[in-house]
Every structure is written in C-alpha cells, then in structure tokens.
Image (cartoon, rainbow, N blue to C red):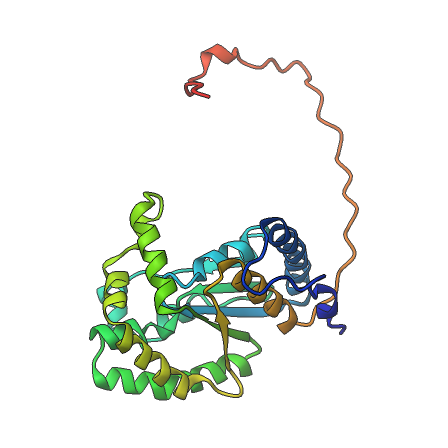
Length: 274
C-alpha cells in the first residue's frame, strides 16, 4: 500500500497570521479532491473509519466537518451529531447510542461531538453523577481499544480556541441572524464557566490521550488555517491510493414512443420571484 500523503503537501507556505482567500480556496479545492480519492479507497478496501471532533463551543468543528463532507458521498461519509439523550437512552449503557452509529465496511463516520460529552458538558454542568463520570474515565480508553482491535480506524481531533477568539465569535453570532441558533443555553454556560471546562478538558486528556488513541490538537483561532491543517492531517493519517476512474458512457435517451407531456400550465408552479 502506498501512502499518498506526499501528494497533498501544500504548494507554498503562506503567512502564518492570515491566508488570502484565493490561496485558501485553491488549497481547499485540492484537498477536497484528495478526500474524494480517500473516499473511494475506503469503499474499495472496506475500511471502517471514525473521526471525532471535539473542542470548545465556537472552535470551528462544524466548519471543518462541512468542508470534509461537502464533496463526498453521504452514503459513505456520514455526519453524526446526536442531541440530548432520551429518557430511555439515559437508562442504557452509556456507549450504546454511539455504538449504533459506528461504521460498516466502506464507511467513514464524522462525530460532531461524541461520547466525550460525559467528560465535558455532562461533567461541568452536573448532568452525570461522580460515579458515572469516574466509570466513563475508566471505561473510555478500553472502549476505544476495543474499537481499534475490531479494525476501526479511530482519529480524535480537539479544536483549541483562545478565550479572546471564542468571545469574538460569540459576539459575531449575536449580530448574525443565520448563526443565532448556535448560541444555545449550553454555549452560554460554556462561556461563563471557561475555567471549569478547561479543567475538565485537562482531566479528560490525562485519561484518554493514549498511545493507541491519541488526541490530535488543532489550533483553531484562524478558521481557514485550522480547516486546511485538519483535512491535510486526516488525509495523511490513512494510507490510500488513487484508484483508476471507470469510464462512464451516457446511454442514449429513450425515444418518446407516442408519449405526450402534459401541459405545463396544468401543474402547480411556484411563484417566480427571481
């Protein structure tokens, strides 16, 4: 197997503080082509890939997930973003509702937050007991080792954002009606309890940043740079080859054989506002 990571190296290292839009868009397009090649390799080899995205609110997790999945087949690359557990799920084995979304052969699952909710928001906000928290910390490394032993490729990203940058992004959400929905009560609580979340993250790393399943930290104060760096790293983490593309020939269109299309005016048409 040949690792194609050498073909995804950036063409030129740009200014570390800011990436010009044209450079960013060109590099993103190139990396997304590589993601398509990776997708086809995952399907061809029957790989099972799980990628976890964690980090503070407004750290940019959703943005990079969108750029990764944007050009991929949603039947192969699936995004999982679970909401609050139901009353029934609260009585189940903690990892059970996440296990239901693990990949089959030829699939890549992107977890927009994951079982690490217990080590973060549940711990800080008191949504779990001390015993449940301690049980999770002991069980999580073994759970992940079980996944890896079963053949799953597990990759974990932590998006790190500074206090100042998070504050700017929260303020921007207040002024943007398309982003106001992102300011949930949990987001506001995370802003208020910054230090508590920092301590929870440090404790989580102490238990779960293992040799078999390490945390990869993504500096995320610069969104564009974080997206490119994360995608580039993801591509380098899974050795893949470019598969030959099958030639597709469009078949001739079926002849009418007496078919007459109904009058267009008989159908209910939406108003042409634009």
